[in-house]
Image (cartoon, each protein chain N blue to C red):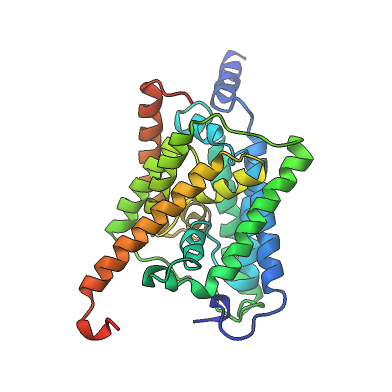
Length: 163
Length: 158
């Protein structure tokens, strides 16, 4: 009895909000990527949208390679925004706004923008599609960003920045 | 390259599938609460490990698709592309870029896909992060173009 209770308590501490919202949400994320893969053989990643959209306003050769895919990447991103909006309307009952300071969002965003392009992928390309295909490159990428992200978040929190 | 890249005529259902796939993907990001930077930061600070289920739940479904789909079709119905695994090459940049990405993710609590979804749940301040991502991707592109140019032979610099 006591060990069972202890185990339950530990689970409750590790997952204070339960796991169903995360697991169900994750299944939908995978389902969206899998549907696109099944029809098109494309591994859907969210971060290439940044470069492909920059090709609309910049002629740099680095972005020009995405000219031919920029229209569907725009549609994919639009779908993500709309899908999340459907969630917000149906389950959230209106808009939700973050309390994380704008400077953290902006500076963090710059690092994310540089890192995902240098590292050839982000949480969806490496994390969901890459790990799903057991790509060693993606597993290495995920491990690298998980470690530095944990370190960064812990240091920032220890410095007393909230949120 | 291929129909997926935009050569020639696309299948009329190509764009609709991309849109529907994006819708499901974005709905999942909203439902999982990953579109909220606070939830990601709680995970990274070891206060709620639930986020693991988003990534691995998603990877389980795509993993299943990678096994099942190539047995159902020879080629992708809407693009005619093969399902061969075109793995990204591993090099130092994967670790360096991953490390830089992680610093940004740990600081802001947001990644590209979740950022777009965050806009969808009505979180307008996330535009700071999306703007930052564009700045970062642009800076990296400019820098990369420069290195590529200085590496290229004079004849190709037309």
